[in-house]
Amino acid sequence: MIEVTGLTKVYGRTRAVEDLSFTVRPGQVTGFLGPNGAGKSTTMRMIVALDRPTAGRATVGGRPYRDHRAPLRAAGALLDARAAHPGRTARDHLVALGHTHGIPAARADALLDEVGLAAAARRRAGGYSLGMRQRLGVAGALLGDPAVVLFDEPVNGLDPDGVLWMRTLLKRLAAQGRTVLVSSHLMSEMAVTADHLLVIDRGRLLADTSLDALIDRVGVDRVFVRGPRTDALRDLFRAHGAAVADDGAGLLVTGLDVDAIGSAATGQGLVLHELTPRRASLEQAYMELTRTGERA
Amino acid sequence: MTGLTLHGVVRAEWTKLLSLRSTRVVFAATAVLTVVFAGFIGWNQARSGDAPTVAGAFLPIDLFSLVLGVFGVLTMTGEFSSGLARATFAAVPARLPVLGAKVVALAAVTLPVLAVTCVAALLANQAFAHGDRITLGDAGVLRATAGAAAAPLAMGLVGLAVGTLLRHTALAITVFVAALLVLPAILPATLPDHVAGDVLRFVPVAAGQALYATGPDGGPFDLLAPGAAALVLAGWVALLLAAAGIALGRRDV
Image 1 (cartoon, each protein chain N blue to C red):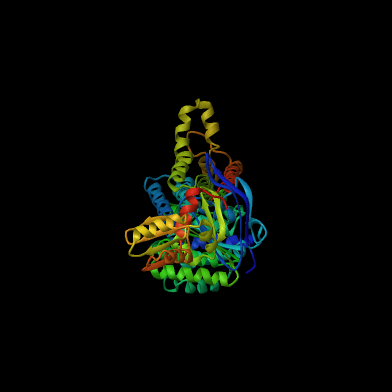
Image 2 (cartoon, one colour):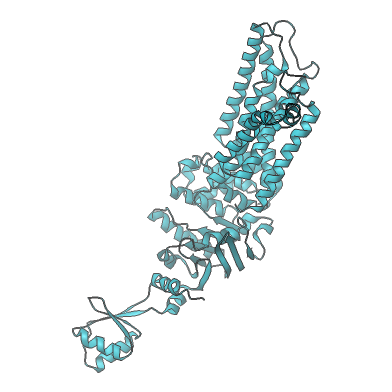
């Protein structure tokens, strides 16, 4: 469980994070969505006490991160692909990090195996690809078997296999009952991994909602309609108060659902060749949110 | 897993230090160079008929001081330049124990190397002397040898403090060299003659050199007595590390 209350971070005149309050619950993947520079990384850094909030507070498992007797057990964070010294081997890096908490070297070896770095464990991290560094960062984040996991843009630099691996990992960590907060500026990525969404822009929370609720709430669902008498259909739907756009192949109708469109067309004896609901993508929902700056 | 302990943090820093190949290479190369230079100095003194001096044997220690100072800087700036700092300080959110552990680890790794290097430097230097050689049993020689081993560590700790305060490698090394090595060379020209010596003997490098001097070295000003020099040097190290600790605790990583 992560609880953030009134969290604010001001750099000079820039208000990077503004009065942010939310709760991240265990057992599900919570997506932290926002454009680059929205304040996602800053918020994550404040949660694990790397940055000091200007105002407000963040707790992990009920208390501030720095007050935990075993911080690595409370939360593990992957904040940047660059988190190891280039001159040190992956194994030495993890073993040294583990020493702080009395974590045995065997745990480092097991994790290196789990993230697929066993063969490269005794090579220096400076020669690693970006994807390998991400994997090493994941191993570092999981070192203390943490109850809370924070991953900042974890699929950056991963190849397709790596992306799939990361999605599976996130879901598995959540299924194990951990609290999983994963940030991304990629809406498509969130759509396939996240159960719950926190949307922020310019440091402010825009939405704290489930994936489906967000799409519903923004309400940009449309129906694609195609028939031989396009003009007649357009006039009919407009007469029913719908907004109609012509995309060349057919009509995109907003404001009437499939049932209403079908009944209206039949009532007028108009033939339909296609009647397809087009659910708003998360991307559209997100664009709608950030455009209106609407608050949750 | 036992949770976060100070002992664990020291062990982590010790492992970090020893697991870098550069640590082993730098220490071995510097130790060998120091001893070789001490030998050449002894050979040259014997060749020109001069009596052997402790000051001559320990002259190359300046090299070790410079190298350890830069090494101390890198011990902390390397964390920030590589991004490792985020992992380090997420594991130890209190932060100050990391600085303390780096001090302990640096001392534990360097002191044995320095002790061996200083004794070897003295032996290599005296190997060429005709007749009566300086030995560790002579008055003040053991103390000077211990001082020669301690002075570079003090520079290493000053470097660690500067690196912690400035974080950026190139900037920190420049400031370290400029403030500790170049400034004392410029300073005398800006001061009245009768004041210059009183100021200069208190700068860290002069206090460090006073630790392994065995009497007037013929320099432009008199060094502090070894005991006073040790206090002055310890004061510098403590002051700078305290400032570094405060900055480390307050600033964002």
